[in-house]
Image (cartoon, rainbow, N blue to C red; front, side, top):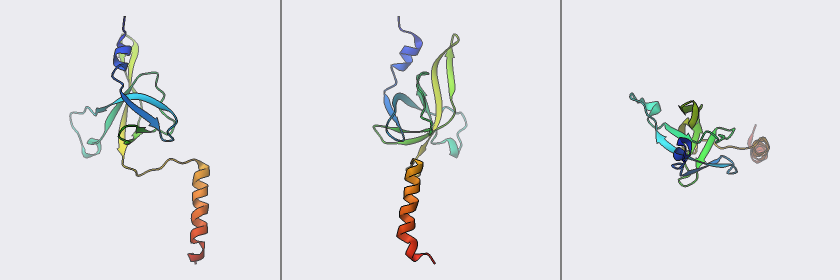
Length: 122
């Protein structure tokens, strides 16, 4: 017999990756359900996933098909008869205004620009 958790997992049809493109998981993006929307919540969405999904540490995800990037907020859970059946995370779309890099990449980037612009700095 199918449980409610398995039935809810059936609709997880959108593939997400972390910012480095390594870890993947399936989920759903839903509209933010709020009776009084403000400008700040107009583009907010809900990432609905199975309770076993681990959100990446950087709290940024990319939807694989569309390439949309999102910042992930804190978890809210749905329960049925004492069991967690869904995990929901408010997410906010980001329009290519960030980049995720390692510390080595940041330091290399700074060294590159320092060498490039050093002759012009007085």
